[in-house]
Length: 257
Image (cartoon, rainbow, N blue to C red; front, side, top):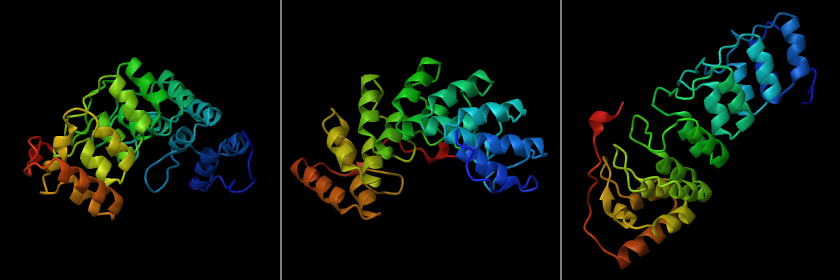
């Protein structure tokens, strides 16, 4: 890795070390450590330490250095996200493997119940997602809101991830406690290409006519952020196959945390 610009080497400035961890500036970090920079205490405003920044950008050499300095791979930020989750989110498999080998908990979850597999799916990393399943994470795992991998994939807009999950026999019909399924999420995020693919799957068409916990349909969710192309596409589809609107049966706000 590049040593980067010789700036921000003030060991009293916690953010300086985080900057170099993020950018993979190993030689600068080594100098700062030798001068007294404390990587165990240095965190940003969101509670992220240098290990999380290095993991998120896939800087394996920096990860090794910080682990040698006894930085805790399990240390979470304010939301409960660990360095391993950042590596999974951004698809850095070598970083994932190194952190797990160093004791990072594969089955850790955030305060909202989001696990490493969910992060990998959201980040559209099939390679990391497959590795995680092969090492014990569950295909149908859900967060506190009841969101499973297909819901995360639909929200991300990754058709490749959707196809991979379908090949793994993931349940695309399952909806969360808010009454949101893959159709809702793809519509809300404006992913028409994903909707076109999803609506070819048996049984998913019904989700177009289901109202969520707030009484909104996928068309209305698409309209909120101004996805007019998606609104028109779904209205045309619904016009060809009309059904009565009805509440989603999955709604269970008592389960929401």
